[in-house]
Amino acid sequence: MSSGASMFKGAPSKPLLKQIYRLNLISGASTKAYKLDSSKYKTVELMLALKSVYGPAAGLKKFWRENLPALKFHNEDVNFVVTRVRPNSDSHQDICAIPNKIIVHDASGNKSEIDCKGKHASNILRKLVQLTNAEKVADSEIPRLEFPSQH
Image 1 (cartoon, rainbow, N blue to C red):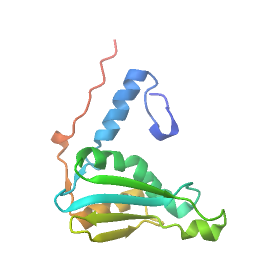
Image 2: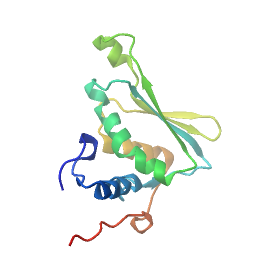
Image 3: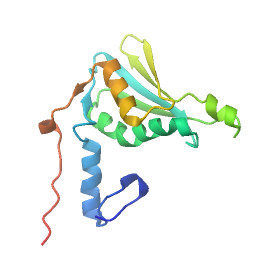
Image 4: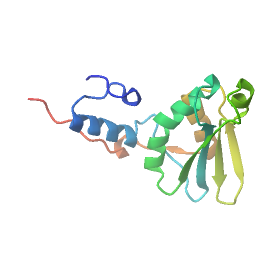
């Protein structure tokens, strides 16, 4: 496998194989596939800087790229929103003031927040799972496309 775009490291170079690879990323690995109770949770909102040049925001950006597609795939009745915030200026102080967080909106209108500054993507996922009591999707229930055999 050759390297594809930076977002899809390790992706095959042939278009069909690359599509299969990407679709399998979306359906998620068993470590990233969780089901939220859509009767309790209506919206999961990510707030992060428009330009992720701020080190402590790296975990949330990675979560957005690597975990959010699988969460969206397995939670079609939950609205996932990404809000990109532009700082007032390019000053370090303004960039640091941007909230890097996840806001979970429940069915009764209450909001819970996860502060994501300086946290690794896997830690952010763990905190979201704990907050929402999300259940792991069984590996047998995760659809995967097989790569065609090479002759």
